[in-house]
Image (tube, rainbow, N blue to C red):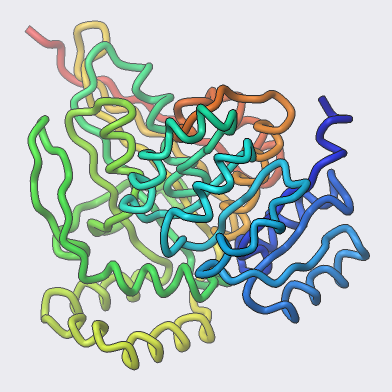
Length: 369
């Protein structure tokens, strides 16, 4: 299998951003000279290529017109998408040509549009892997694992803690700012319920310092995806930041209505610029799944977490590991989310061979009558 991989290229769109850079550098160490970093700025792509001592090749690519330049796909085995695509035309070309596709978006609307291309992928013989990264991605795998620990699962809460001392890319920061005003639908007790980002909050128990922290509802894709893929009755995603004051401020802006000012492009642009320029707090991250249900006639709460430093780095390393597994092991053609294809514990254990840590805690309560 390795010899086949070495004859083909890996195209990373948005590959010089905070996450894309990690993916590119990680894969370039294993496949030197076969990684292409593409984006609107050739200068940024070329700077990364020079810093890699030739392991990475630069390319200028604008996603809005990428479908008009199919030659970029010549000799490519896999495309890793680190940006939110404007439409499906380029992705459709990729899948029609039998090229594998990996997407790290946290936007469920985009994920559902790619899901609709499943027949295109099957005919083309390509595999698309979605929900790749930290959230969605790692959290999906944690949810898949914890589901197997119950006879009957009632509820899953996904908790994300992000340290704002980490370097966050402008695209990811802009997406977070835009979703501060999001109203969306979750499944609760098997029924749809309308909720809003940063309006509801609750306490979550994190393993980093053994304290509870306030977490806030947020419109990350994992809660929507695992509801579909794992058929769970109740799923919600909650987020907070380090420092905690940032989360409190965002909740205040939402509840007071001041967050509506972010709908003005100039306000959004200033907010994104300030947020990416000023780094406060630690660089730690925590991805956690807390599940409650029935096990052996008792109610049980099962909590699993992965902790580490550098959310962008973690997202990049998870993605690179998925790409390696896709190219080396092979997956069936079609469109899948990571939890469809990947066994959670072996994947997580490989990831935590570095400086990430896996935590697991089980609490059993009352006997059911």
